[in-house]
Length: 104
Length: 162
Image (cartoon, rainbow over all chains, first blue to last red; front, side, top):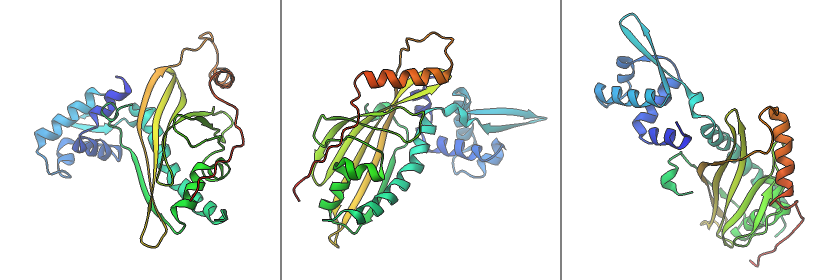
């Protein structure tokens, strides 16, 4: 799936939140539902879209399905954005120090 | 590079600085100062100017840029193109950086930095054979870029009137 499609899949904020929650650990649909105000069918719909995009994986254990995020599917664009998320605050701190050296 | 194609979350930061916008503008528009807090550069702050940043990591090639907007001392905006090497090949990652300066109540500066429009654009066509190692590819790419549109860094100071 092209990278820009992955970002369209994540454009919905609830879906993004589901994805981020599953980055923290494996969960069943009902466990997931507990953290959201949307209905269980809505959660399942989001999980379906995420699974189609390769962003989450499911594991069957007995009667239950456990979902887990596969964040490596966001390579490389998300990694790029994340890198800048960390870089810019550090740069602005440097700017504050550099400004003290500039005479007016 | 339209926003509609790129719903990826943006970076949007703000901070207050004690220095007035005219001074902060110097730290943005003069390569000597910009290089101290961002990356070594040959930026010239006029619209359409092409310039580059040279990352400090040895393996990384220069970041090719073009000035999109200049409004001293209020706004500087440029687009940049970085090369990303992955298993799938080499791609450009394009993005836009916008820095807005406003005067705050204390006579200092309110700075807003936005970095967005991240997009993967065309795949670089490499002239090397498929059996080249990735390390060799990077070295070749770097020298290709130097020979082509990217200027070598030049020392250039542009002073804007306050």
